[in-house]
Image 1: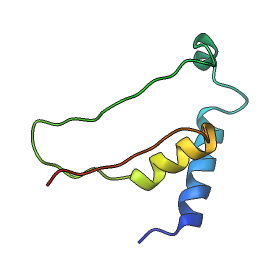
Image 2 (image 1 turned 30 degrees about the horizontal axis):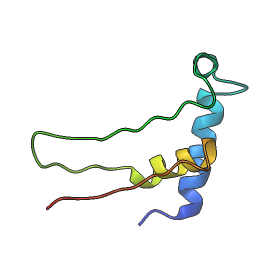
Image 3 (image 1 turned 30 degrees about the vertical axis):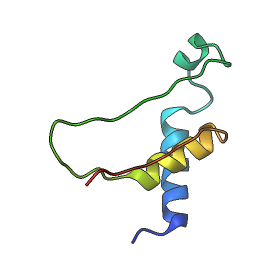
Length: 72
């Protein structure tokens, strides 16, 4: 299992490298805008990196609602 500290540090480094001092494209979206997304596949598969995605949302948008589910 990957340690929570490793996930936090990795996401922090990635965001600093990718976003740096600001995200120019983010300024094009109204800060009060809401969005939702659903990932759907045609076939069964394995989704990896949920801890990293959840941490990225936590660091960039703390009130974001992140829900994972699985249909087996």
